Amino acid sequence: MTVRVQAEFFDAGAELNSFAQDRTDVGAVVSFTGVVRDTKGDLEEMLIEHYPGMTQSAIAKIAEEAVSRWALADVLVIHRYGPLKPGEPIMMVATASAHRAAAFEAADFLMDYLKSRAPFWKKEVTAQGASWVEAKDADEDALKRW
Amino acid sequence: MNVIYFAWVRERIGLPQETVETDAATVNDLIAELRLREERYAAAFEDISALRVALDQELSDFDASLSGVREVAFFPPMTGG
Image (cartoon, rainbow over all chains, first blue to last red; front, side):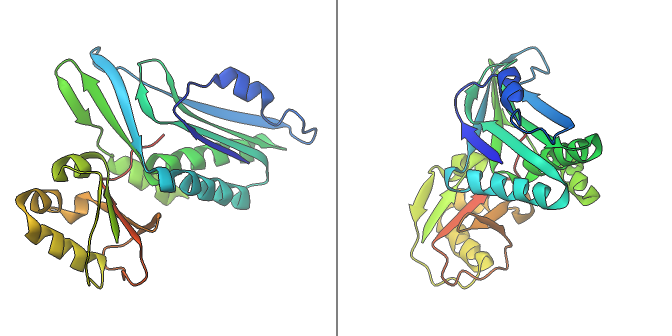
């Protein structure tokens, strides 16, 4: 299990290629990459604030929960903070398992929990000003699935 | 204890963290004390349903005890992922 919280850019393709590559019992690898999206065509940057004392441990707990629920060979979570430009990767998760169902479900679970339980806050900066991205009720409701 | 603010809570109060001397028994009691300080605190804590709290880096509840707690963090619902 690997959890990285970083300001630096990461190469999702390279990360995925090296993920679980030394395991011969893995039959399925699922990944998700979250990207800064410019919804209205005016986004200058996305500022991501986090809680340094809590972020790493909060994500590790979510990943450990995934490992306890599904038969996973490995889990990778990378999440960035700081100023990001449109099109840049924000975060990624990858799960490896013997079969695809566990890998898909665990990745879905990780994303739902990272969205609402990892201490990050997004602020969108445009020429007109800056505004905090509000959490959606649907994101909180999504946790009830698990 | 160390009190930390994030996102718009930090902006509304105007500082990222501070040391607070308090005998507050619960998070709710601490909030009641902070609200009385100044308008900016009253504004930040106006609607508790819009806030989340962590005690010593663990998500917690507003009725939780502050006994032995060294760090309290207030912030809006998280928007990770």
